[in-house]
Length: 622
Image 1 (cartoon, rainbow, N blue to C red):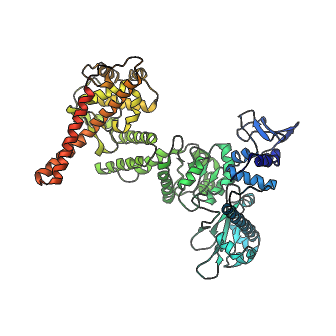
Image 2 (tube, one colour):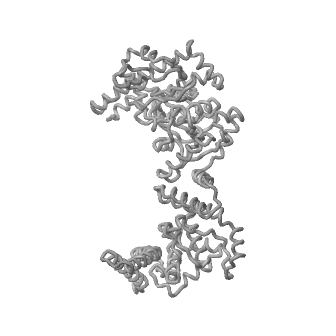
Image 3 (cartoon, helix red, strand yellow):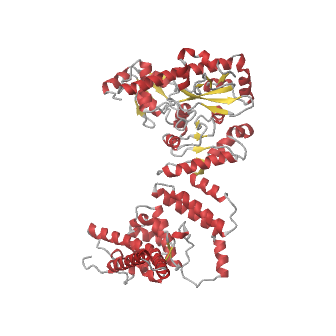
C-alpha cells in the first residue's frame, strides 16, 4: 500500500490531537497548548504537552514524542496500518488500495466487520431482553458487575436454530456463513452456530468485533464454543482482550496471560487491566511473538490443576526454539485446583498481586516440571532427568542462550545429586590422594554422558596446552563452550581450572588475559594457571607469548590452531573407538566394505596425528 507523505500530512491535519489523546487521558488547556500527566510514565505534575497547531505531543519528563499516528501505535498498541485506517475513518479519508485483489479483500473484510457489529448489537439486545434473564443471573452469581458487563459487551444467543439468521437476513446467508455465525453442512439449510449461550465478543487490537465465544448455560458439551477461523479471525494469532490490555501494559510494563476469557474478565474487574487469554488452544508461537512486542517477559497465570500446568509447560516448550536475548516467559503457580477467579474470590486481589510480583522464570518452570515428573530413586531415573533437560536445551536455536541453559541445568543437577555432603561421604568411602588444590568448584561434566571425553595420559599434554591457550586468549572460551564442557580431567586441579575458565567467560564476555588472571587470583586455580603460562614444553602457537603489538595474522593463526587442538582432543576418543570397532568387524568377517571402513579410519587417525605434529612445530617467525 503506497501512502504518500502528502496523504499522511493530510491525515494528520484532519486529526485534532488533543481530542484524540483526551479520549483516554485527562487534558487541560494551557495557553495555546494542552497539558496532561504523561500516560507513558507515572507522574503527579503534568509535563506532557500537546500542540494541535504543530500536530505533536512531547513529554519533558520521559521524552515521549510523536504525532497522531505515533500515539495510536505507542499508546493503543496498533500496527502502523491499523492506526492509519482508524484515523482515516474518523477523518473521512479513503486509504489508497494497492491493487484490485487487495481492495476486494479489504471490501470483503469491511463487509464482514459490518456483519459482526450487527451480530454483537443483536446479542446484546437479547441479553437485555426477557430471554437473557438466565444469562444475567449467571453473571450476577459469578460476581460480574454491570459496569464490567457493559465494558466487555456480554450478549446472549437464544436457544434457537434460526433466530439470528432471521434477524440478520439483510446481510445475506453467505455473509453470515463466512463470518462464522451460521453453520452450513452440504446442501442442508444453514442454522445458527451459537444457541443457548452467553456471548462474549472477541475483538481485534482496534476494538472491532471479529469473533465470538459462547458459554453454554445448560448441561451439554462443549461448555465453551468459539467462532471458527474466518477472514477476520485466526484463533492461533488472536489474543482475547488485547485491545484493552495493550495500552494498560504500557502503563504497567507487564502483561498477564490466563487460560480463558472469563479469567481475563474477572482479573480486569479486580483491577488487572493488562491481561489477555488465548482462545481455546495452547499458546502459540505467533501469540508469544505478539506478547513480546509489548513486554520482554509475559507472565503466564494458568490454572493450578493438572490441565493448567500441562498447558503452561506446553507454552514453555513452544517458546524454547524462538527464545532470543532478553525475551522469555515467566510463570506463576496458582494454588492447586484454583484458577485466577477462584483465587480472587477466596483471597482477594492482593493475593494474586503477591504471586505476580514474584514470578517463576522459564528455566525454573522447566526444571521444576522435569524434577517432579517421576521418582528419582535409581541411577536410571536420574539419568532420565538429565536426558530430558538436555533434550530441552537442544531445542533452543540461539546457541548463546542454549549454553546458559545447559550450564544452569547442569549446576542444578549436580547440586541435587552431587552436593558437598554427598561428596564428603564418598570421599570417606573412597579417599583420594591429598591435593593442595582446595577450590569447591562445581564439576562441568556434559549433560549428555555419551559425549564425555576423558582426558587420558596420551592427551594430557594437549589438554594442558589448551588450558594455557585459553588463558592467553580468553576470547576463545565462549566460542568453544560445547566442546570444552565435554572434557573431563582425571586431575582435579585441571578440572577445577577448566570449570573456572568457563564460569568466568560466561559472566564476562569481554575479557583479556590480565583481567582473567586478576579474577583467577582470588581462587585456588591461580597457581595452576600461572604454571601453565610458564610451561616450556608447550610449543603450540597459542601457548607462546606474543609481542605487545602482534600482527593480526599471528593472532588469527593462534586462534585457528587452538580450535584445531580442541577438535583433535575431543574427536580422537570417538575416532579410536570407531577404529577399534571396525577392526573387530574385519577380524570377524573380512569383506571389502569392512576392510575399506577400517582403512578409512586408520587414515583419519594418521591425519589427526600429523595435524598434532604440525601444531607443535615451532614457528621461528612468531
